[in-house]
Image (cartoon, rainbow, N blue to C red):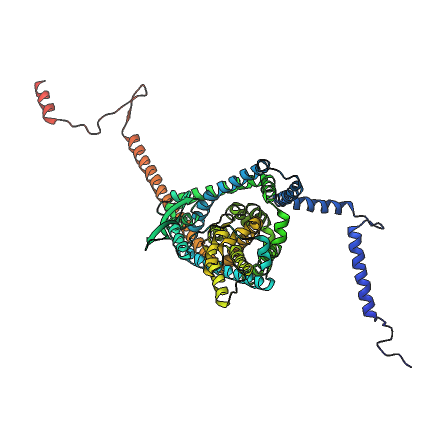
Length: 575
């Protein structure tokens, strides 16, 4: 029986054989270029090239390497020291270098925000500042809502809360506390428009609720009286508003304000150089912070086992949002490799994870955005300080998951309306959250009150909030940075038009300066020529009038001698 064509052996044609031979020759030539002839050993010159590239990469990313080593060292030392059960005094000594590092970073925040916002706003016109602000706020609102929806989907799909978890954890101990989302937004407006810019540097306005007893029909009811007060902490939002307004008006004044703009530009540059110096001690500070935090958590293994599913839900949502949603948004609007952009932010990402504060990592973020990712400094100086205050993507996700988790533990059924309330309230409260560690636990009280869930159980999450807070802070940081890149992409045409207009105005000023200089030179030349002509006339008249003497001296004589003829004739008659 004859073999089919598929069963027969394949015989390459002459052209296929030539192609195979040419490919083999190319591969052999490449191997000969890389390796020594007849040996599997790299040529010395190739070794030098490889070592040179490795050395260049290490020197370029040295700060990134030492920051990563600080995070790794902190986790490793903290885990190794836990079996020794150190007392609080010993842990405080370990945490001391980290405390100093945090204080140095926070010291840079206020002057950096002031200088960067004023110079950024002054470099743009009022219309451009308004467009950028609108795009920034819309982006932050949209991404916070998306983040909350991701948390909702995951917490419903995984269902981390159960009555067994509540039995294992016990009841919460959070005290009764009056909260109101309307007052939260009213406080947001009060902080946005401060009445004293110096007070805003160290105090923020907030509504206090003072409990008072009201007797009604011989029964005492507890009521709350609202009172406006101030608490310690920088009012970043008010300072941002003042600096944006100040910078916008400053930029509209033209040449008169250039000296002031240069002053703040120099301050901005000085602060960035100071931050660069501080980052060289980051391994010690970051490892100290993380190590002390791990050592200070009591019953770490039992807490992780009881709330492990909740931690998995939150962390999965955070990293799903970071590595899918943000990357997709970046690619759609910017049309570049989003993971390369993320790699450029890795150092600020680790700093945010260690400090658990977007504001504390802001100086490092500025440096990464300018030097690594080459984002327009006018946009990054505008968007990043605003984002560090109002953009809380990770907080919106965490509050959504935590609120539904508490409802699940207490066997509370939530319908579609309640779930929508959770998502919208979480998004709204995340905007009003201050950029300080563990602010989300306070905001959860508002969401739990909205769905009639027991707010006392918020205290059950304090044991693991030190870790989850760091994870969601990285989400907030990346949301700010990707937002700056998206706003830059959306504003590219306006920025080009502004640059072209500015170049045209500078060219006109340059041409006008040249014309003025030419006119000035022409006037000066005419004056010089006129002076030379006057000197020549004076010299000619001087040469004609003097009379010479025997000894070389000259005696000035009158040019006209008047002779009285009558006198002469009378003297002649006498003689």
